[in-house]
Image (cartoon, rainbow, N blue to C red; front, side, top):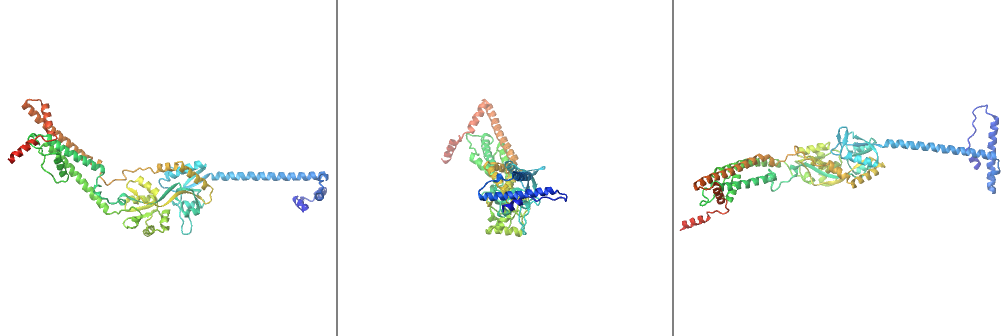
Length: 535
């Protein structure tokens, strides 16, 4: 066996021409026979306990050693060449894979166009992850503007389909983590938690309350009306005491406009009922005319706004959750076509959710994009069902919209990669690190900041600034009436001072002291007069 193995290791001599030297053939044959003889002797000596290889032919042994050395050198050189080729090939593969193809979809605020660049929550997240893992990337928009769903033939479209077909290395978008997607692509740990909720106008979601009659005016307007009412009553009370035309004899005559009567008179004018007696002095009449004008404009605004609000309420229902939505047929509702939200209602065993799905399928009330759903909700008579995180963004942008409190089907948004890709583990670790460092919360607050646009959201309640002209006219009337009352008292004091030959300031001070007493000075005289009448 040893002889056969050794002979197979050597290559047979090459015969390239007929003139090959006979001497060389003889040498080769002799060398070959010598090698066989030496090996046979070594084999026999090994069995006989002798080790006399060194006593064999020295020339043959040296030649065998040289040939074995050459073969070792050849094997070492071949291994070196193979190693160099392997590492070069790995280097080329690494260079190609270092620039990842990222597929995404346009949706505010996740991915938005800014000139030739992209910005948004997902772009910031991609930048932070790329810094941690050290890779370059190239962002491309999904061709069919779809997230990814499976058709009847089992083919996936959208971003999920591009990852499956190898057209993209990663899909970064508000891509919901579902069991169906997890089977065909690799999904990372969620970078955001969300659920399913309802987006609708405020006038649809708000219920009728006991104090809805106050809705025509805001709270600030009602406070302003109360201040105007008390201020007018106080001005009437003061003007009636200061004006000598209204109260000529403070010592003997009672004042008709006490504080309670002034409040009652102002209330009567506010309700258009009137309450006598009316002021006789010019100052009191100016104040009353200003208040009457104020109340006419105020009541006109109130009843006009109350009528319009009641009319709109009669055409809307109150929707606070999915059960309310399923139990009515006046408000249309739908969700994004081919989305995970639709799959949730389709696969649910809940009777309410099944009714919602059957209604959407029957009426085909789906929308093709998130923006279309928000726009239809803004127009009214439509409730958009979608991801609660996306709905919160719409509420922050448009003040007339509101999200229902009920949230079902909690799930998360994840990054998708080819199935079995080793980068999934590293992406999940990077996302967890960003979450623990508070970076994800910062990005959420950055892109979900509330910016209610005033021109987009108009409240049905009358704001104080819209009635500022009316309040200004009333204030001018009250000020003018109080000034006239002071002038009337000053004029009478000057006449009395001339008759009594006293200083005008002294007489004016006495008049003010007499008229502004808390208790009427003529009360004892009134009691004496009553006693005389009884007698």
